[in-house]
Image (cartoon, rainbow, N blue to C red; front, side):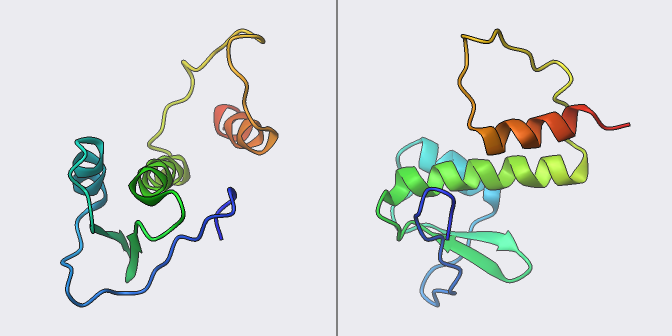
Length: 104
């Protein structure tokens, strides 16, 4: 179950050919992603079968992409800064950002 209470199913769908993560994000952003199946790697697949449909899938895929980048060290958050009133960040997200910006 995802943090927002939605379910990100990982059951294979035989009729759909899975797309790569970046391809699926581009397709969903263009509004053409109905029925898309996304290959998350390691035999895991994702579909827009939650209550928020394609919008929810797109948000989860963007989050998945960011978490993969953070885990691999590919995300550079050193330039990230914001004023205290310009951006509201959930405490769990702030904790992740704090850890990634204090690598040493």
